[in-house]
Amino acid sequence: MFSSPCPNPPAATPAPAPARDRGMSTAEYAMGTIAAVALAGVLYFVVTSDAVSAALTSIVVDALQSSP
Image (tube, rainbow, N blue to C red):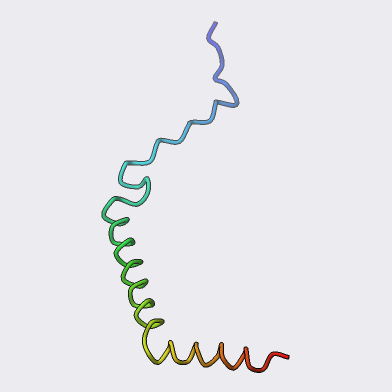
């Protein structure tokens, strides 16, 4: 008369993640972008400084003079 419960009930689908846990927010992207630009600026100033420029020029000149 009554049906027996299903021995293998269907698996419950997971609930969707709350909106706050779906990824980075706009503020986090902005902070990451600012950090990347700041690092690029520092590297640019280091590479274009007189000491580094002279060292790189010296390396290139020495390499070209020692080639057969």
